[in-house]
Length: 203
Image (cartoon, rainbow, N blue to C red; front, side):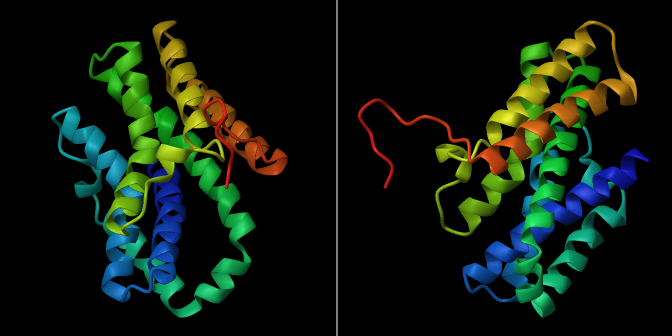
């Protein structure tokens, strides 16, 4: 079940990466690279920090799912763009899932709650950072006006607290993931924005 949820999250993140490739007018190879990095980059960085073999290299599905997402976007990107609201909801679900799972895995390896939460956030948003750097644009994380990283931070923090209280397993993971998902959906629906520095106005 966990692997199935992982693959769903990977698929949605890969769609967003491939769509960035379309917007940047990249060829199919560039689209595939962005899809793979968006979907797998955060988990790979986390596992390298934990000094374990990245989960992305333990199953062919982790590599093939982003390729499938790239093919869908390559042939039908206008249709994918039209259903982006639904994709955004799935993306929020993937964000919640990855921040919770990433935090739990980090703490399973003996990291402190603070460091575990940081790696949880890395799992959730690291792929997006790599995508934006490769696409030649400022990572969204650096101007998180749409509250993308903030829900991941809160979800990871809750997962770390629950783990510290000896509450592990899927109920704790689900609770933290739902919290991050709900905050992300609320931010999209209510158009919540992170504040700018005092005296700075948005463009």
